[in-house]
Length: 256
Image (cartoon, rainbow, N blue to C red; front, side, top):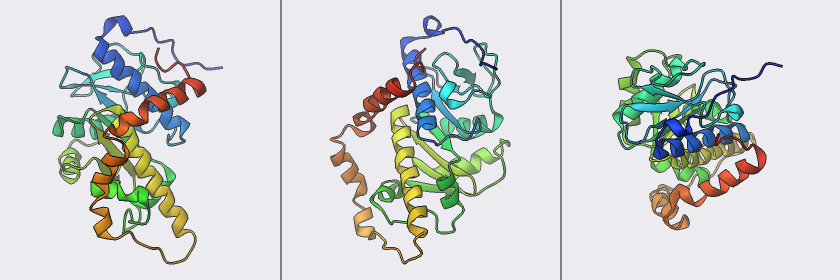
């Protein structure tokens, strides 16, 4: 049986803040797999290295998401070049998308990108995400779109992508998938959970073949305030510890 490379622990080689970022990011990769949002090895989540404006952590290209550990994550510079040794390469498409967002948005510390079936299905619809559910109301307060330009390999796409993203924290990449970003891994993950749920609900509702009821704009305008109230001001930190406990039960070892 082929096994992934044995990756020695880097815990003693990095700062405590970087180690925490590594643990959270590795957890996010495994949670993406646990929720069925992965696409073999072809999507990505990145996190900024604390205290290092132009260094990021990203997945080792070739490992499945359920295999990723804190130590196996690759630390790269803003050119996508590893700054610590790794037996794995970096996905060039992943770096183009993620480096563009990190460079343009200094307060964004995590970027999460998926190719889920429901997300891609909605991305192909001319109307995009529809206001037909409570779940859709939250991303619709802060949602952007970016036209498909092929596999994201070209640096010249960066400027157009970040211009389309603007100050939004959720984006639908037309004919491609979904993207969320946040001040923390937890924040980006919860944003993706909500956006993915909204897309799945939309496809299920449309499959019924009957007219859909839209949420009024007057209600959508209050969803941001409602989100803060329902989370008791904790935002994503309300659910992130529980998600880590679930991961500890179902796929432990990410924090090694």
